[in-house]
Image (tube, rainbow, N blue to C red):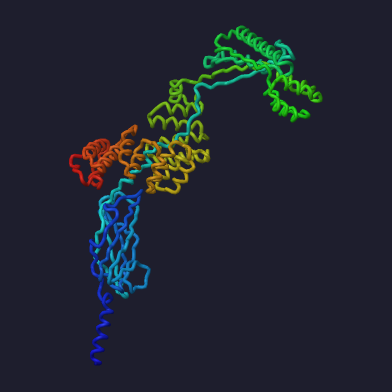
Length: 560
């Protein structure tokens, strides 16, 4: 009997040791699946999730396994964050796998993409710890390749923001004079034509008539009467003042031999109640609030006048201080100052830039499409106008277009010091940070550039680098650029992507490369081959890039 009890006890003990005394077996590739397969970049990162289905009676109860994802490629490998899976008797914080039933585990992987990873494999390394005994297991391949289409987003193709010149070829100037009349009269007195404002107006008309770069657009006369007396009388009086002033100006222009003056226009207002109200509001007249209330209460001009006259205590003051100022004819001369022609400005920019104003010199740069010529002009502008933030910003713009990002950054920083509030400069500083991969700083600058047209494209590229495709599409709006098309490709809206690519104003190698990707994703072999040929013709390096791109894995590119 005792012998049977001993045998039974040993049997139970052996059963208890099952799943604890053996080593962990080798993991198999078939245990794992990777999402996505092939791996695809999101923004500028390579994220993937490996899901393992561990079979029953595989995971030893006392085993702790550290699983490390490793992306391997020709010139090296990149390890991800390790994950611990463990048997049910292990005291740790890993993912527990039952010995009897098996279980599911997940191993996330994420790293920053670099082009060397285009041809790569995702593997898992295993290190086992069983009661302090450490040993490794063979590496297992669980994924392959990387589709890096999202990394085609490029800040380098965004046109920096220009700080616009304020050049105006035609500048219109207005010159004013007032002819004041005595009560109930329409006679122009000598002291009025000898007044400084009329003398200055007359002088400017003569100067403009004699200057080759000036023209008199016209002369306008507005006459009125003060709102005392009947409306009928004031109407006739204001009209007479208009006629007298118009005749006077016609004679004056004739006397000064001014024949090209556009035209004389004139009008009259019977009673200047608006002017009356404005003068009363600005005055210190007693009971002015009561007067203003009467103006508000009564709309009929005759009744208004009578009610105001009934306020005998203030009417005398009105008649002395306010009403005389409303008996006038206002004369306004409109004169255009005509600036230099485009040809004159271009010639001076090349041969005598000192003869140009800051705005003329900045404008000169917009008269050429040659970036080197623009750069030379903006360099002259920084020399002649060293405190011009616009000159430095625009010089940086031309450096950026040339790919001289260090020089561009230096120019933008100088512009920023000269005008810390310029949104155009913030926009361009954001581009530099995008190119350098400083995304938080880029987002800060671009956010400060709200309202600058180019900022939408910059923001769209920022969102693409962060993998936020929906936000990128919103930011791009109706833009017809490679980056905007890429956002549509990544959101799988291929018809919209193709429409954008077909409308890109100056298609380049990237434009055709993206069209080839659209062709591949829509099973259009003709589009793949024809567009890759166009891309390679513009940039031969694309041939190798295309052959290594899993987007085109199902197509024969031997003829590219």
